Image (cartoon, rainbow, N blue to C red):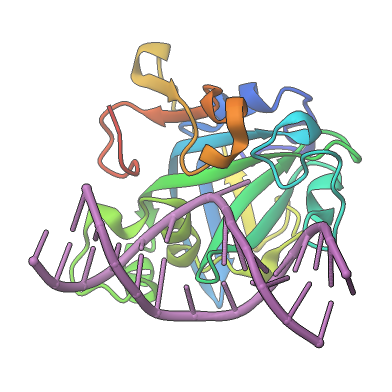
Length: 200
DNA sequence: TGAAGGATGATCT
DNA sequence: GATCATCCTTCAA
């Protein structure tokens, strides 16, 4: 079933990040459906999280999407090269978001391969946030799109992971965030080959 | 108007 | 493991 709006309105973005492990992310972009199982996420906990773009209640044209009601896509450019896909959560005015760092490809693998310009399929096809966005055709054009739209959505297909199989740890690439860089806001499926860097 | 820097990934060694 | 590609956003003046 497609996750309903209510799923995204919870105030506990860390719990949502954990729960999204094993859910399925799909896109229907440029006439092609691609998607797979989410195997790695990170929580960004609003205005008190130094690693978040919205830290200190910073509302700018870019971060505005995070302040909208949950259940939307927040897509931005990083390092001038990579686009990253986040799921906005919580009520309007509360800028919570979950970064999707890796998925296990299931549908439209050939399309992903083409988008990624890969001659052979390797686990890196969807490992890492920049790779996920590129493989699924996600760009800044879908920023602020509803996750209840027919272009991008998340499904619960009944997959469940025990806590023993879901590891937590500090988030990647947020050393600038001081003590907040140490928060265990990263979740990933233990040993899954599609998880970026440390996957154990 | 300008300067600094970033929620990364591919490639090479 | 080190390097680099590459450009938008932000903030200060």
